[in-house]
Length: 285
Image (cartoon, rainbow, N blue to C red):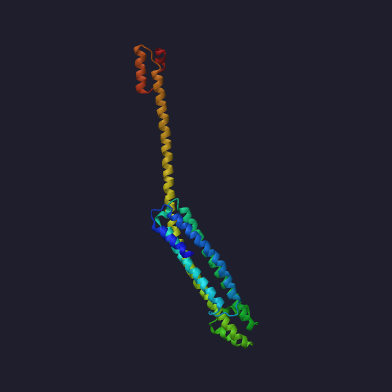
């Protein structure tokens, strides 16, 4: 399913003339995120099965299934991050029509990755608790500090010596192997979490670049708004002046009669656009 989505998305990307190219790619990425979210529930079930299995070796059926699914999810997230980066680097992603959808997809990818990271973190904590519980089976008299020191690194000599000195020699050997296997699982989880952290950093670095572009667009929009407002103000002033001038012209033209003096006064008012003096008004009328 994911491979088919990728093929469709790449074909859309090749068609640069498509005005909906960015929006279509966002839709495809969002659909892939939904699929990965659904697979996380399967991962959670496999983690629980591996935790409860009596066979803790890397070759156990439960551990193999868990490792395969975890690696596949990590690989798909890596591809998803690469597609999201290409989206955010596209010059059209800063377009006001596309920017909101690109931002929404970016947040959706990060939310899904965060959920995946939380699953691994929770499973890691459960493994650590199981290691400590196994250790207490053979060393029930150990203090909390001793348990933490011994299980922090099962490869250390302090751990081996603690199990050898146990009264339960028979259980000590199997417990030691189980603890080492679970410790290996913890180390793998930690490596996976480091890779996820690097993916987060890649996306965050591009967010800053996108925000700068969006900010520039918003600033230009504000400048255009200011120019339009100033233009409207100047236009209103010009209209008012034109109306006042027109009114004065009609007043002057309506004053005159047939005598030369009123006609001359009318002509004078017409060209000077100034009102008649009070004493001349009496003469005209």
